[in-house]
Length: 364
Image (cartoon, rainbow, N blue to C red; front, side):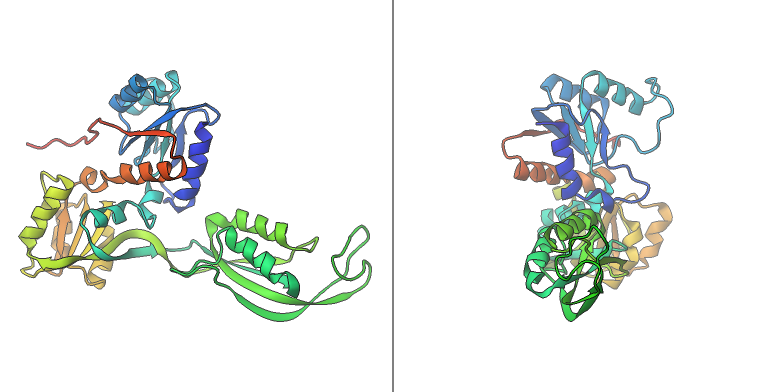
């Protein structure tokens, strides 16, 4: 198998277009054409993780946190990032990362946290914005089924838990073929009216090219008329954070002990206990204080995330319990998501979890 086979699959399974503008997900280091027989999965990449890959013969390291965030002006080995790049290149090891795009995936980091807590009725907390498009095209009546099915197979037409969603209306299309054309209906050089179906459906922006390709391939016309519109609608299947409910309400202290055990969080920071029971829980892997208002509005009794600043705790205002379990602790299970995705697609490919503890924070 080649590096690009894994990368191309992950680029689609965890759409790179979902990442934040500041992010750098995707292939970080390595030759896409290089052949590999195994991969190592880790939350972070450190020199120790590269050493582990070298000794184990792994040709690819897959991480949640990207190795390279900012452009590298020099690669001299002065910084730990430069040393990792040098060591990876010298040993023919590729590095791939799925970061904020994995955060917003419906089955991503926050969802994994919720599953570890055994939450029920899990849903996205802050849906994706500015990622939806509408496709409008015009199809001869007797070709509607063929064309629409091709578009659906390419990934269009999903709204919530429904697929193959569309709207159709009947009208007439007019056209005249110039010299050199071979019209599917009518005659070149003569004006023609054809009864057609106006077909509308919805799609995610990262699917645009493949949906258009499927449309043109299945459509009978030489020149296919279609429009693509950007939509303001939110996409509720994917987004930052999630929210769900515990099987039964528990006290604040019991909830903190539960988090400590499941996430192996040795130093939990939290706001003043509200005095109420904890039942509805909002979660966000990594730094998620930006979701405080959505959590309160959604009726969460607690928001579990990381990287709070001192004054963030004041903003709880006894409305919600804020819990900082640590950045590493909140995202430590991201490796399981990446592992499961790869094994599902390539069941015979060797994938292993790194045994290196990459948490840079120590506790006294």
